[in-house]
Structure formats: structure tokens, C-alpha cells
Length: 440
Ligand code: ATP
Ligand code: MG
Image 1 (cartoon, protein in one colour):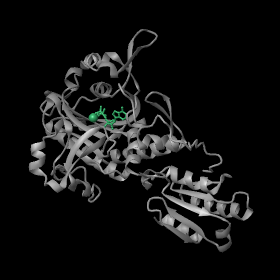
Image 2 (spheres, helix red, strand yellow; image 1 turned 45 degrees about the horizontal axis):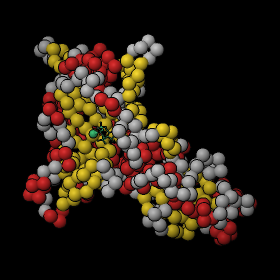
Image 3 (tube, helix red, strand yellow; image 1 turned 90 degrees about the vertical axis):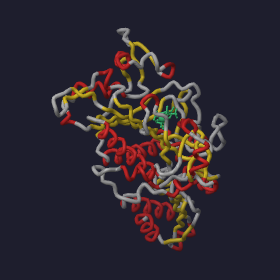
Image 4 (tube, helix red, strand yellow; image 1 turned 90 degrees about the horizontal axis):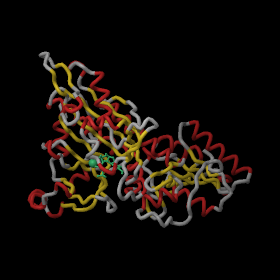
């Protein structure tokens, strides 16, 4: 991509409406613009990141055996009347009527729709288990939308729903999602800690929130510091095997949000030096709810002995658009964003310091073409901005690598490679730089 053609409306000044760093940087880096309170448009740079996160989420869902579907954003109120939730859901639900005066709503979640699809399609225990996911926009009319995409009214969520014959099978489905979530967040470059969450009237231990520790988070959380050293990618996972040892490892220490926090237990179980009490951002939530929806909606299958069995369900959500903000909260410095490579909008920013100089233009174009030929995404700054401003923009948008090319280097056959995160710089030949970027 050529910067001169790229739609990248960066802001030099800090926007006054942004209270936290991720919101500020997303606006300044031209990633998003607010269209209405809590409702955002995604501009090219932001959309690239959103899509990359979405793709990692998708790959890990697929690896776990879940299958992708796409349900609509608009739902009929009648389904929610059947489940009994229509009146309870309250003002967070955006309700309206179509031209035939039928009550409709913009989906805040999809339990009803998926259960409706399932009950008409699946009749036998032989077709179980099933786990279906989609990545779709949701609307919740939050009282206080704030912090940009972190608490929007319209936001992108990956949600999925598991269907099983009995409790043991439902637990295995739950465990699969537990592991898939750990791996997803690790690949995205986020340390998250699964924390016990409220199970409501269902009881039991099958509800966890995946929390990223951050001062700007909205929940108060408490956990053992050892979790920060756990590595979700340390071993290969076979999703058909019993996953309970992995779950046992990841729940072996204390970790709870305020809702479930027990200070006495915390102090008894965690040595003082290892206690972390801070704030956290909920990026995912998994939840087993038995027959809460399948019973009222009549989602049953014929069991092995010919009896009707009401299926056991769970639902699982990842805040895909919230993750963009969460990553920035975890990874930035005074100059701007620092993207983890796995989600970066481009891997390399190539700066031509002297646009208009034939030798520099030629060398920049050469490097650009060769990197792209090697499958590397590059943003070439071919604008006539001052050098200082080019450096500042590149730092602000946070691409993992910068390549700087000027008249002096062109003469001596070198380019400068800068690593955004460490700030390390190296003088390399163009070939050396390409090898370095293709290799690592
Ligand atoms: P919260 O407690 O933050 O309001 P929730 O518990 O209501 O979230 P869930 O129903 O568990 O949310 O939704 C699954 C995921 O969707 C959450 O873990 C979060 O990452 C994301 N999410 C929920 N609400 C929002 C929102 N208003 N804006 C952006 N992401 C959201
Ligand atoms: Mg939640």
C-alpha cells in the first residue's frame, strides 16, 4: 500500500473525547471514527486489524471443531417471547417494528436464533455434539458507552453455542472452548487469565471470564501472579482427548473478579508477594447453562433408548472489536501503538526520506516490490511530508518494523531497520533487510 493513496486520517492533537489511551490512539491513528454514541465506523487501518483478529479467532474455533455460520443481526421478538427473555432483557435491547408492525429487535446475543435453527434441524442423538459459531455485529444499548470500542453499543462478537446429549458431553464442549480461548488470546498477543464467573441459578463451576489485566479495565480482579507465566501454546492440543488436566492447570490458582471474590480465601491460598489485585478487561466469556433455552424452545433429540432428551447447551463469546482496544491498552508507548505481529495491519512501514529524488524513489520502489513479492505486507511512505513527521506517523500507527531509506543509504547501499517494540536499529543491505523480515 502506498501511503499517498491510503485513507489514513491521522490526528496530530489528542482528541478531547477520549479518556483512555487505546481510544485516543485509535482516533489519532485514523483507525476509527465515531458515527453516533458508542457506534463506530472502521477505517482501513482499523479494519485491517479487526479482520486479522477475526481470522485468528476463526482459525482457533475451526481447530476446536466448531463450525461457522452467519446469523442475522435482526431477530423477531417472538423467539424471545418463547424463551421468556423478551420482557426481562430491559432497555439494553433495541426494539422496533417492521412495516407489518411485527416486533423486531437488533440482536444483543443469539441463543434463541441458534436454538430455533437447531430444533428444526437436529432430531437424533447421533447428530451430537454440535458447536456452531458466527462472527457478527451485536447491539446493546449500554447506559454509558465509553472508552471507544471497548464499551460500544454496536460491537463485533464471536459467539458460539454447543449442543450435547448430556452433562458429561457438555462439559467436554465447555473444556474445548476454554482451551480454544486460551490459544486464541495467546496468538493475538494477549495474556489473559480465566476467572471464575457467576453461574446464576445454574450453579456449578462452568462459567469463566477471560480477563486481561489492565489499569483501565472496568472490573476489579484478584489473582495469583503465577498465571502471568503460564503459556497456552506450550503443548499441542488434541481436542478429542480429555482436556480436564489442561483445565485443572489453568484453574489451579486463585483468580476471581469482584463478583466472586473471597478475600479470606485469596489470602489463605496466595502468598502475599504473589497476590495481584488490579483491574481487568473482559475479552471473553464462556458459560454452560444446561437446558435454559432448549427446554422452553423445545430443542430435543431422540436418545439412544428412544426417549426424548432436552439438549444441554453452552454459549461462548469473544469481544472481537473490544480486543482491538484491549491490545492497544497492553501494547503501546508514549509515541503510539505497538502491534503484535500476529494482528499488525502491515508488517513493515517503509519510509522514503527523499521523495522526488530519482535514486531514492527507485530504491524504495525496489524494496517495496521485493518485500511484497515475498508475501510481506508493506506500507510505503511516499508522501512529501518532513522526515520528523514521517517518523512520528510511523511510530503512531505502530507497525512492528520500520525500514528507513535516504540519500546517504542509497549511496552506500544500506537501509536502516528499526524494531518498533525494542527501538533497536540496524544498518543492513537491502538484501539483508529482506532476509531479516522474511525470516522473522
Ligand atoms: P460486560 O460485563 O463487559 O458488559 P458482558 O458480560 O455483558 O460484558 P457477554 O455477554 O459475556 O458480555 O459478551 C461476550 C463478550 O463480548 C464479552 O466478554 C466482551 O468481550 C464483549 N462485549 C460485551 N459487551 C460489549 C460492549 N458493550 N462493547 C464491546 N464488547 C463487548
Ligand atoms: Mg460476560
